Image: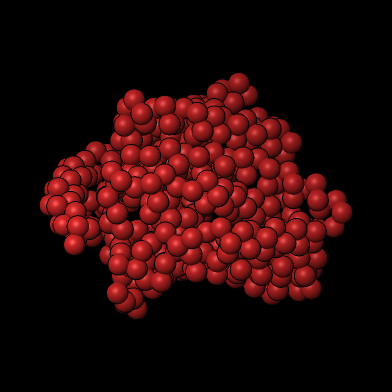
Length: 427
């Protein structure tokens, strides 16, 4: 599809994508305050609850790593719509099992099913790439990121409130809403990938997450971009995996105060992605916006490492606001750059591989952060995180030549194919 003549996406379709993104993130964060209480019902030894909760959380990330490339490949072959609907059905079933419970293996089965089918972020991003002109993708990815920020605020809050009426209720509610969303998708989500742009067949190698990740890392226009995404994801893990313990040890904060900190982060990220990002992309371009975001994030990590020394709550809040702005600029912009460097037939595969890389970071990050925090020092996760972000900035610079060649090749192809398309239309 010629990006110059690509029509603006249908409002109903955009609503469905935004609503699905919202439910994805709410469902992911819904379990955070509830998991210890659910697990405690089925684990006799209280000393094993933390480890079991950890495995329950990791099971989701592991399954996403396994499933994301396959889901992306299937969407390249059969279209985005049927795979997306299948994912919604699986997630609804996974949450239903969490609500039913009855034993520990049922909880794990629910998280496994949701992990395998919940890796639909790659399909949603591929759908956006199918229907939105390249020049506007950064704006739409920013909107989705802003929705994710709202979800991070609301998910634990809604889950904790509903749990007062029963720990199973939030999961039954999530399952019901996802089923309604499935119906919305069935009626309002048209197919975005034309048959002529689909892959002719699926090589079984593409279903192997390791092979897929290896394959996309060999693509010169994507290699360093994907390295940058992996490093930024790995550095940001320090926030979700360690910040509560860090705040407790350094500032003597309780869970309520840490929750307030995350609310500030969510609001700042929402403003950054919904308001600041579109304006900056328009005036600076996607690449420069990514660099600005990395600089903000590096400064925030350095400030957080200082909190271990000076124990300043104000410094912690400033660092978190800067981090929210930085993350809000980085993630949508890197995603925009990846979709620009990928052809229509490979969007699902590449974005699925990208999601697997992020899942790898989500699996390895908590172990790395916990190890350096205990054995090196409380500031170590944040100092090393700043170092990883510097490496990510270096990877982005290394990606520049290949990105410029890719853009030049696409421009050449557009010039060559335009007369042919016009001739075919005339015939």
